[in-house]
Image (cartoon, rainbow, N blue to C red; front, top):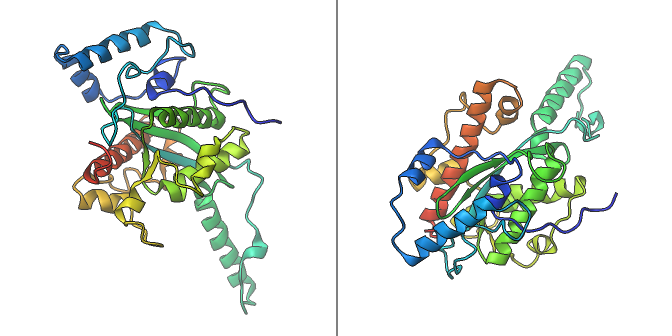
Length: 304
């Protein structure tokens, strides 16, 4: 099967306002938007006019432009389209890759019971870590939060080609990636060079979704739109790892919820449970991660 053709570029607004896409925006942001006073500056009036044009146009046409497309994208770090993102993954039991007993180092162990216990321990570890590898895991959702109005959205693949699949999530991601390149804006994550982006690239290869060459070039020459906040915080020190939760606490930019409420380790279990309360907990966890990521970006001077 050949790769899908090059994606049309789309802003977050285009991806989630049209085509039946799922847009999750908290009530507080909605209320704040409704309560905004009438625009007073020429730039604000232009944004309002452009938004009305967007809402009137169909998805996938020249009429469906970003609400900020009529504005000049300013230089520096005040981009309205700058987007922070975070992926959540789960196990892919159809990957064809299973636990390999021959990979377990037994040393001089001879006792059958101890060997069986060791195998069971390693198998359980393999299953727990399925979601952490693109070879044995898959993307369940990608969360986005954008500058300007800071509109959060969670893409579960309900719009675009192959709706309802991981492929749809990936195709939407690359559309927005290329949109940000065109706008000379930023795509921001935390440890995204070590986890999120490599995971997305490899799952795109798996799902036959075309990966822009500019994204692959990121692993050689630096792609100017992609910013890893962990690398910025560690000042590029090789091998140093620090978690989002610790950095956010340090910078007073929020904190993760208690692990018994939700964590990355149980996100997939909650998100795919079919239980409304558990799904809401998973969504709240992802939205909180996005909020922390944006807060860290602001503290580090990446966005304003």
